[in-house]
Image (cartoon, rainbow over all chains, first blue to last red; front, side):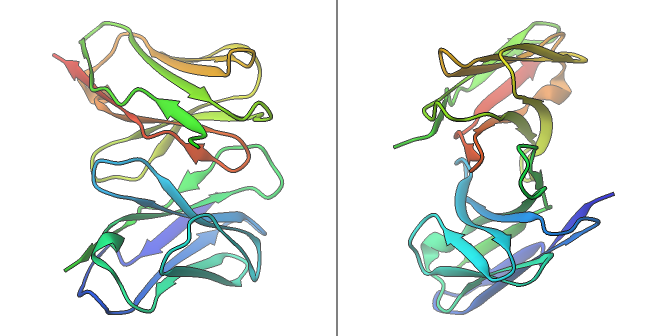
Length: 113
Length: 107
């Protein structure tokens, strides 16, 4: 069966510091991968999605970037965090080329201080 | 331009009642629709997917799709306190989510 991992689970970072969040998927090949952010009390905002290694599409211009160095690895990064980057970051996967559902990882709670 | 719209609620129903959650979408080309449940502090979990017009039932949950009206709904029968959560609607290949509807089931 497929499993999706995210780490760290929680993170407290000062403004201006760098960020690296990692997501890996097991049990499937060539998945579509997604990064979402959920601010407190808000809905899910799609940040990036990827249909393959090195293929990244950005939905929202911001100080975040994403990379997909391996088929089942998706990384979210920032060079300098802003207070507004605080939130719940969720990675999700979906079978490539399908209309099927997305499955979410456990999430990373980021607090920028 | 929002792709998916939901009433933010909060919606409160007594235990045992039917909870009705609604969602509209703007992209007529959307072919897939999903309902997720999210407990506070947790990641969303899939409840139902629906692809064709009409009703789809799974236990106490029924999803309804009307593509002509661009409308998706979720009915929860015999609501339980454990159903208290935020319910998210998603549509389309790009998986745009609504802002979610907060449901509270009162014992």
